[in-house]
Length: 99
Image (cartoon, rainbow, N blue to C red; front, side, top):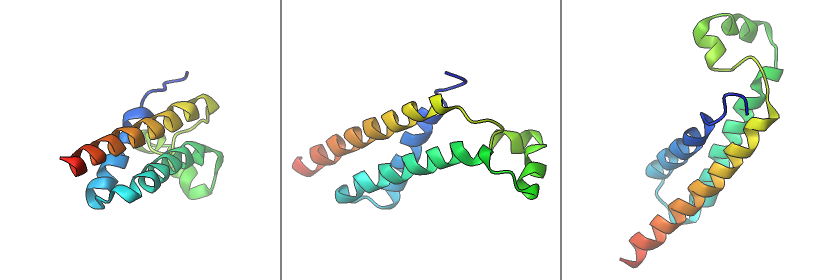
């Protein structure tokens, strides 16, 4: 995979961060679904070429944020980590509820 792996901690980080903002066990699935969806949407962003975004991409910082290419091989790790993050957070939620 092309430079893959960066999205894996990214999905878990944002999922956990969102859960800290809204710590409701019944929302864990929605939170990780949202974090995974946004990460995948950001991966598709390089397909969009408006003039203002093309200018941003010319800078070093801009090329790092929206990217400049799309690799379908990046999606399975994002989805897998969304599922793993969901399972981890559900286990933690159950353990803290029963304790």
